[in-house]
Image 1: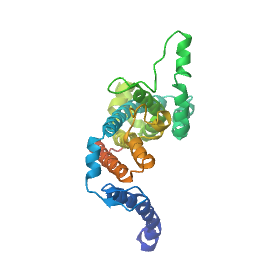
Image 2: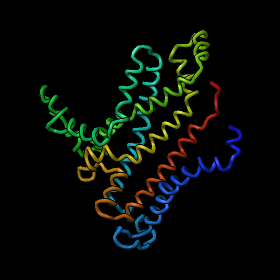
Image 3: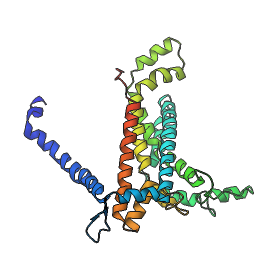
Image 4: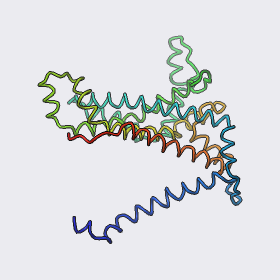
Length: 294
């Protein structure tokens, strides 16, 4: 192994493919998007440099304000709910012996299913004439317009889609926490049991401090995923009614692929990129911790 690490040709063989993939798939498209964000570009004619005009248009775009508000709602909702539910499920499944793999697979299963298919499924479930409302009608209860109500600062469809997203992706957080918990030495828990600690106290004073780095990683993934959230919303509401459920990703898609305003869409993409970088930096700073020996 030491000879392999000292062999520059071997290092290049392993590094170059990944470097080329990163450059052509990620770095160059990001640079192109930043350039196009300063241009008037419709893909049919050469881009025309217009300076910060696209960004000033963002400030006056009412749909952009709604999309930003909804994206921030998803950010807070996803990070908080997936942190709480992921830790709760991980703690419960770690402490049971029978049926652990069954429940773990059932909870994780939605993560590997197609979001497009799940979006259509939940759209039918919350349809006014199907699913939940039909069950409520059996008890003479008039169900709300789950995906069309536009009242309130955070409208009902956003809460509905938020809970669907929680159902789909909580298994990812749970698996990350379970993987970290399984690496904690059993002797720590045995020592705490001898000292008279309850399971809740052991979880609070042993488990939580030792999985703090993983909590930061999971929250970073949740934050980035919630900011670029697209597929469920697009399949359940398509950003409607009247753009009320737009988020940054759906607004970017509409401007770029429906109206062919690639320069304006690139400006939205740059804003989204900056927000992802800021949130990742803040979360990493908040959960920065010393390494513990477990």
